[in-house]
Image (tube, rainbow, N blue to C red; front, side, top):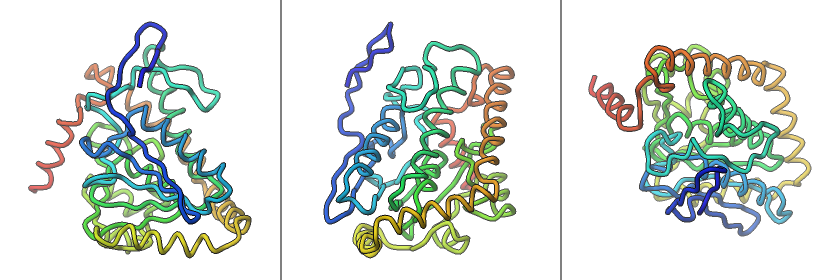
Length: 295
């Protein structure tokens, strides 16, 4: 794929990083960067958006499933693979202007308002039921993709974590933590950066069903088929009603505030260390997380 930023053209050698299929009323959308644990670069984000729009436009599709190829659901946002493309322009889907030629805090704020917070809100409001099929790691930006789905089915070896406080950042951009977990558990989750296993996530109400790696797709299919038997309009209105109640409870307004604090931390990091991520890339974060796991 060739992307033109106006002054440079970059060739991305990865192919089919998002796959799509639909059968028996179910659309299957898969992140397909298993070599990088499905780390989400800009290209993947926009291809996910295209896939979701395709599923919404297809009247034969009643339920949408999001999953990840390989060992893990998603290791989060791409902060260190050869395909990292934060500096590139994209075909934007909101009314935000291009970030690629901007300086200072504007660069990252504009990009993340469009590609992270903005897109996650769009996907959360898809009028068709969505299910996340989660195996292995669901970390940081991976949480955002699972949390925009209406239901989560996780394997018994799945785990969830948001370790970005280590970067001096108060959680990922789609700040749903106090709604997916109660506030006290959300604080523990963020303060420690600890992994939360599938069993505890189910106990907290974040996960709907626990499966195994061998049975995950079969279990998700059975759940999706049951939902697909319901009237399309009934499903859409039910989803809209529950999402509306969440927003009345402050979910959308809370995210606006948390997003601002998130970007204050980026700016602070840049002023203090010269790096918006506080000096952490993918390798440094992985090493720090492994060291914490030993304690």
